[in-house]
Image (cartoon, rainbow, N blue to C red; front, top):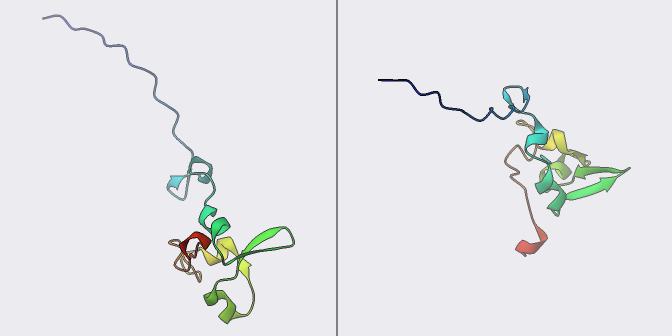
Length: 86
């Protein structure tokens, strides 16, 4: 028997990892749902969360705070409310 060399395509470069996950730019905008949500509000050029849960705390908060694991909306966007849903 003879061995045959098989030419393979070079592997695609892997996305850089951040905290064990692919870097955010590989996924696009992490807060796209927030941009479309009725509870988002712009203040001083920043998009903030103003969901009912945040209002109980007193003032709008940054999206990365609201969408953190312990945030008011969480990573799964619990309070997501799209205008098209009504």
